[in-house]
Every structure is written in structure tokens, then in C-alpha cells.
Length: 201
Image (cartoon, one colour):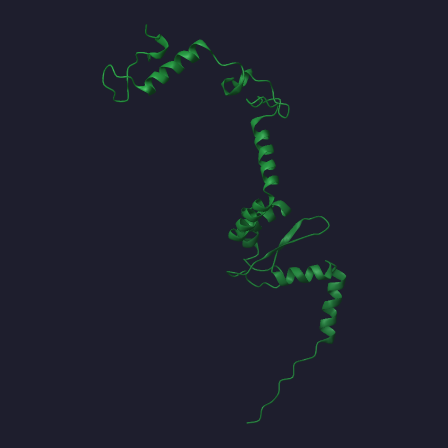
């Protein structure tokens, strides 16, 4: 007597098999289709609809992860990413250093945005207002010459764009206008006129 379980189900083959031949792929697909229809998945895992999952603890307006966690997908992904970076700290630092070296302008833009709240459009407007030159010495910001963002150290308010020399000078004076005025007076009173030597022919 032939065991019915050993016989493959009669299915229409889509893989080029001749009529009457047994196709393993088709037989397996037919078995899995019948198994899913007779034994549905339990209410867990990825087949659970988002509206049937409990609310996430971190964001009550979002469903929790389908793996049984009480957090939403975004928070769980952030936690897993942070855990991976902690385990591979040296590798992550090397990647960051490599990216900073390859993208210096992007790094400066991110630093200005984080520290001063300046967007690229704001810098362009300031450069146009200053005729693309330093606000103190009027030296033009030619190609390859970087500019510094001058700001008030007490209020962190941006005052303008200066060259590196002028910005350093203000920092050394401590933004003290009285000291700077005394320096101006000192230069005026102590300056020695330049004597041009007369060459006899």
C-alpha cells in the first residue's frame, strides 16, 4: 500500500517540468500554502498588524516593535546603533576622522550651524553686505583665504566676518574697547617717522 504522505501534491508546474513529472519547488510551495491556511501564525512577530500591537512606552502615539519590545522602531534602532558604536568605538572614530578630513567645508558648516545658528544662506548675505572682505582691515576674502565668524563672548551674538588676524587681535584685547583705544593712542604718539635715505649719485 502506497503512503499518501510520500506522494507530492498534484500541482501545475511553472518551472519547465513535463506533464506528470514531480517538481520539488512547486510541491513545496503547495505544501506551505496549505500549511499557512490551516495553521495561521500566532499573534506575535511581524505578521501582527501595527494597529493590533500595544503602544510604545517611549512614544505612545506609535506602535511598539513586532519583536516584543516596548519601544517604537525608531527608538530601538537608535539604541541598537548606539550599542554597536560603543562596541566598535575605535572603528567609528577612524571613520569620523576620515570623513572630516575628506569634507572640511561640511565640518565648518556644521560647526557654524551648531555654535552660532548660521545657515549657508546667512553667511552669503553677510559676505555680500561686507563686500566679501574683512569688516576691520577690509582685506578681501580671496580664494583659499578663510574667514572667521566674530561673535560677542558674553551674549554669543554674531557680529560679523573677520580675517584670522583681526579676529585673533580682538580676542587678545579681550574685546576691551578702552584697551584698544589706548593701543591706538600709543601707536599715534610713539610712531617714528620713516626716514628715507638720500642716495648720492
